[in-house]
Every structure is written in structure tokens, then in C-alpha cells.
Length: 110
Image (cartoon, rainbow, N blue to C red; front, side, top):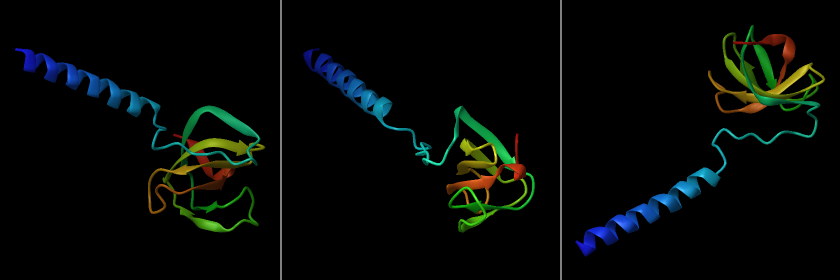
């Protein structure tokens, strides 16, 4: 009986340790925000592209295109610049997982 108690105590301690490690780890979807953001949302906004639009490396057409979000591609916005450019992460389509800037006129809440 003593061995069973030790095994149970060890299992419980391990679960607490692993649970604590899991709780303190950052979420896999965490995105670091660029300094050019002027407005940060309290929680990410789920959006989708209303037509084909470039995902850009910065908030403006002078920045390089990182790929295209096609109509219906999902995009999670974390912040924006002057409510004109949205910064976030692509969550569907060929550019899934990429982060960048999208012209706000081409995305809408879904």
C-alpha cells in the first residue's frame, strides 16, 4: 500500500509541476505588436478579406508584399494604425500563419 501512495503522490506532484509550466507558457498564437500600432484591441478581432488584398510588411503600399489574402481568407487583427491599416495574423488560406499589415478597407468582421 505504501508504494501506491508514493506513486500517487509522485503523479500528483508531476501533474502540478507540468500544469504550472503549461499555464506560464505563452500561447502559441501570441503575436508581438509593432511600434507603429496606434490602436490596440482589448481582444483580437476575427476578420475576413472582402477581396484579394496584399499582406504587407508595414502599414502602407510602399512596404513589400508578403503574399496575397484572397477573398474569404481569415485574418485576426491585433492592432491598427490610425484605423487605416490592420496588423494581424492570417488564419486560413495559402498564407496561413503569416503576420503583417492589410488595408482596413479590404477586411470585415466575420
